[in-house]
Amino acid sequence: MSLNGIIARENNKEDFISHDSWQEWLKWVRESGCVIWGRKTHEVVRGWDKQYLEDLKGVKVVVVSTKKDYEVGEKFELAGSPEEALEKLTKDGFESVVVTGGATLNSSFAKAGLIDEVVLNVEPVAIGKGIPLFSPDVFDLKLKLLESKKLNEDVVQLRYEVGNR
Image 1 (cartoon, one colour):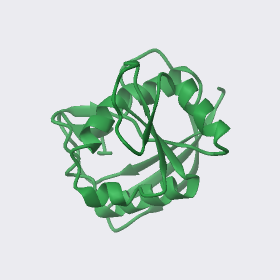
Image 2 (image 1 turned 60 degrees about the horizontal axis):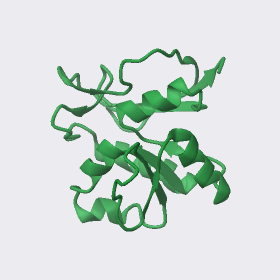
Image 3 (image 1 turned 120 degrees about the vertical axis):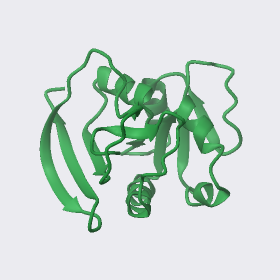
Image 4 (image 1 turned 90 degrees about the vertical axis):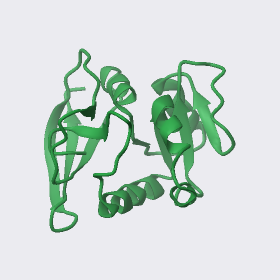
């Protein structure tokens, strides 16, 4: 994300996110074996270069959408809520999950008290307009810094534990 909390430009472009951030995200996703993202993010992902989707080979992807007839396509699974997505993954034996957005989904997980950790890769850029990490909604996440590290000369990763859930 940008220094000021933007995860994508208004046109959904993530051109400011470094390759090092992508590689670090892949490491987390491969370690957990699964990822959850929302419908809008899924629509963006469908337009990605095929190599990025190839990087997700072997990773279970659950798409959350309230549209019950939403076609997620081959290799993806649909869930109607954050709780349903977690239930599906738990039944499949997954013990940890990476939730990767977008803003609406992130807020849904936050409101439901379903976030244990927040990991942010902060890029060295401020974006004037764009999609925030969380959509405006009524919730608080009380965070405790667990770790901070440099991914490269310019990108910092912050890892927080969510408390008082």
